[in-house]
Image (tube, rainbow, N blue to C red; front, side):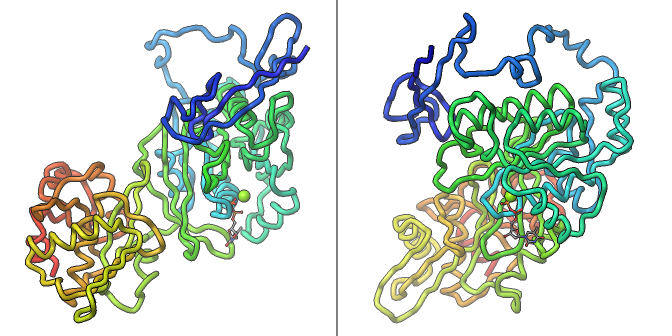
Length: 492
Ligand code: TYD
Ligand code: MG
């Protein structure tokens, strides 16, 4: 006796509605609601939303009937709870990953690793878990389960995208030769978890959430119900067995159905891997982390034999462009946020005297550019009147934040005054109509990214100095300025 029920699901946040509203009532996005036909089956009196086999209900895939009772906080924290431990990964590469994870891997955690297709997620996962200290891991499993795990608990890498041979080839190219890595190719979550439970690995990697499916759940692999139910099954597996699970998820450009965004609130931690198309460096960032801060940034370089941790990020970030000079002519570095992520972008300006008064802006709002130019003329006394001014954001990024105002102004000054700005200077701040610098949100985060990337100087609004006081930014010199004139006097 099957009956189809129609519901509407937001492809962005996963909110489910019984009827169509024209927008998502949860995240207020317009045009993201998609129709889904939910199959309702009658399994012996109990009606469930999904057609779920008995086996799933009983196993770790099910909701686990009655084994959990509420516990007193003092009982929870009594004694040594190995589940609060963190297991650092060894080696330079492992250290970089550990830091992003908040100091190490937590047993029983479910970590989502997101990123554009081809950015290097599979490569990262294949490399990093072998660095998990097997000795400490054994101790934890003894305490947690009262039994010692096998002589060498392996790492299990399950791929629904590539065959075992393909992964093997890749591992070969990356020079990974170990008997502790097990490869398996499957798209059936039930099958994967069964195999994983038998193997009792020190970590499980599932590549990728878009390719796996759970029998009996509506929709094809990658669909919103599949993605959510598969993730929930992996979460229950992780919590029940204490095996940390890494889940790879592709971010789709269109933000279409079942991108990792839907999963962000289910999993314990979300790491995003980013990289520009024509550059070999990759950034790994914690977007959400139940076990640590989200301020950490891992920097890697993609080489023909896999990813390498970059110990001195400033080198790759600065040699990339204008490698032969110490200065950026007509360019300034801005720090912008995207969600909770920070990016460093380069803004270029060209002031061509004598030509007709044309203005061309790329990646910066025209109105914003006009305002900054006018403020520079009126408040800072720059004679820009007889110049054609071109503005562009390198790499096609779009500057939509006011925090980039100061960098735009600095780039224009640099071109107009024909004074190149040293490459290691970054600019953060909003400019008001009076030419004064204003605070922007998340100042600490922006400045620490700049410091991490190896910049030497960061120009910020004077008020930000107070906020940043007492924080350690390493070698970075933070300079507070009240207004544009001060900035010009400080930098130029
Ligand atoms: P991959 O890890 O497959 O990306 P994802 O899983 O995120 O889709 O990495 C794909 C890219 O990385 C591919 O374009 C080739 C490059 N690559 C290297 O440059 N060196 C290597 O050793 C490997 C394995 C991949
Ligand atoms: Mg892959």
